Length: 461
Image (cartoon, rainbow, N blue to C red; front, top):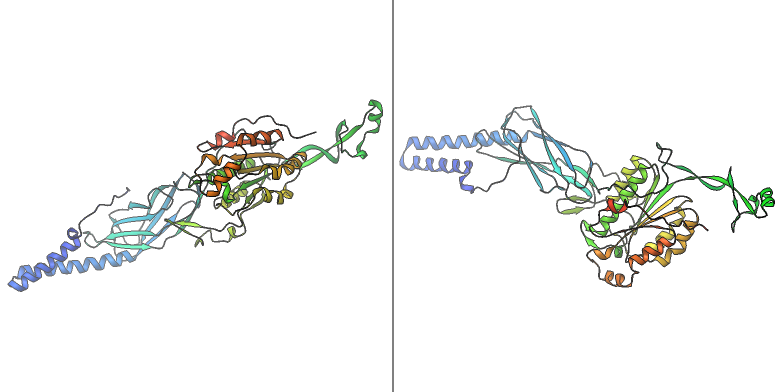
C-alpha cells in the first residue's frame, strides 16, 4: 500500500480517448475507401470500448466501503483509520484506488492504492494514519471516493460513497507537576477527598486561644481559668474538596488569532488543570464565563456547520457550556467534550458573573480563575476574594498577558491602556493570599504552571 501522487495528463492521450479516436478513424477509412481490415479494426475497437464501459460501470456499482477509527483524539496526534472495501458485484474490480477526506489533516485528501484486482464477493482491509494538525473541534470525515477501471485501464470510473464519520479533536493537555490544588484525595474511586480541617463538628480536635468572632459556647472554662485567658475548643470539620474552574470567555478579554490566541491558551490551561484535579481525586466543575450556551459546530473542509449529522447528534451540547460537579475519568471526558467547543462569548463583565456564581463555592475548596490581564477589574471582586479566603478557599489565578498577543478589537487598545500593570496586579493578589501564575505568548503552559509556587498568606487572622 502506498500513497499516489496525481499527475496531469493531456486528455487526448488517455486510453479511452485514443481508443475512440482509432475506432472512429478506422471505421471512416474503411467505409470511405472500402478498406475491410480498417473497418473491422474500427468495429473491434468500438465493441471493446462498449464492453469495457459495461464491465467498469457495473463492477463499480458493487463497491461497498466502511470506515473505522477512534471517535476522539487530541491535537497533534495521529489517528489510525481503517477502511474495509468489498466487491459486491458480479465482476472483478481492477485498479482500485481509494480517496478519503480527512479534514483535520495536513492534506485534505488521502489517496490509497488498494490492489490491481479484487475478485467478486471479496473484501480487503486498508489502513492509513492521519495526523490532526488543525485545532480542536468536531470534524466530519468523508465521503469516500473510489476509482476503478477495466483490466486494460481504458474506462476509469469514479464513484462517491456517502461514508461519513465524526472525529472529535480535543485540546491538548499539558502535564502540570508543581501546582497544588489541595491535598491528595483519599477516595480514589470516587474522586472525592475528605480532609480534616478545624471546624465545629462533634469530633473534638484540640484547643487554641480565643480569636475575635469565636462562639462563646465553645470556651473551655477550665483551661481558661487555669491560664487566665480565653481558650477555645476546636472540632474536626470534614470538607469535600472541590475544584471550581472559571474560564473567562468574554469578548474583550481575548486577543490573538487562531491557535496563537489567548482563547486557545485559556482552554488548554482549563483542560490541564481539570486533568490534574481529577488525577488527584478531586471533584471538578467548570464555568464558561461569558458564553451563554455552547452551540455544537463541526468542521467539513473549510466550512463550519452548526448541526451534526452522525454519532454526536445527541443534544448533549445544547444544555449549556458549564460542566457540573463530578469526578473520575468519565467526567474528564465530559469536560473535554464541552471545552472542545468553547469560543469567544459576549461583551460583559467577568467579575460580575463570578460574584453571581460565588455561592457554588464551598468552604475548603479550590477556585481556579483563568482570565486575561487587560479586561480584569480587581477592585470589583476584591471583597469577594477576601471572604472566600476567610472561608479557607484556596484561590489560584492564572492570568494570560494578552498584551503579548495580536489585538483583535479596537476597544482592546483602550482597555490595555487603562488596565493595571500585570506585575502590580500579581503583587496585590499575592499579598491578599492568592496564588498567581502569569502566562505570556510562546510560554510552555506545562512548564510555567509547574514552577514552584511562592509561599503566600492564606489570609488568616
